[in-house]
Image (cartoon, rainbow, N blue to C red; front, top):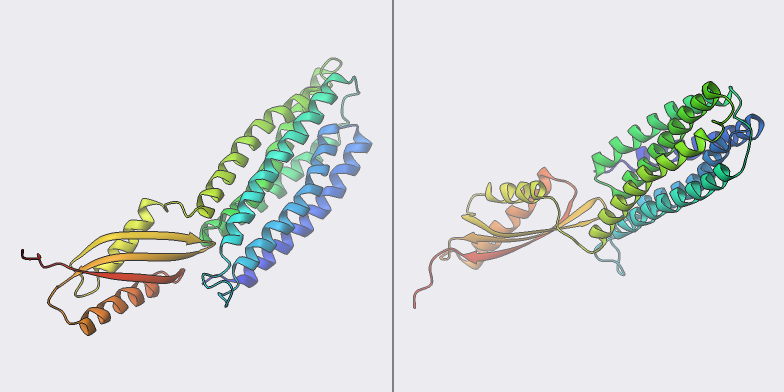
Length: 293
């Protein structure tokens, strides 16, 4: 089962860290003459809104089914993932656009103290990214994966800016825009991952196929039940962090309706006992005996 308390705690930690980093980066960037650091701070402001929407969508997706939503609210999680991927693309465009403007505008090299600030940002954001990515893997959430990538993209842009500032400080006059070029390079990575997250989330919204590994796992569990001769079809639909199954199983054609019904219930209960995230399973029984003509 999903530990909503744990996910809420991680979400609140993310929000608090983004607020602190936003203030630190914008202040240090303005004082230290580093647009890359100011842009990072502005992106953190966007991250605060993005994280709020992402985590709110994830928490709402855990709500149980009701009269108006018999299949639950899981699709909210996938929609939050689409939003998260789109937000990454917007962030990359904004950072890239402003980096180009800075490259075309003569300015002074960044101050040396902006470098340790950026390094600290990389460390903190990398930690958050790994924490949320691990959590997204545990619950199989595209929304949380997207939020993890928001933090990773922040670490990437900060790392690129740190490299650029180092080059600018060492190179001296003529190298003032090195951190801006580094920001452009980081945008390419952010765009790629934003598109990937949006694509995977949209795939879930449209009830696309799950992985072959997960499908085979469901077949294997169903075939372990006594009385099941063969699995003809297995369809798995992901809704948020939950799963809905449709199974076609072959059983002895001479069984009574009551006996076949019992096998169907055993298949469902066995799968749910092994994989608690399976919310429901519809089991169709097919007679395995050949029909005589």
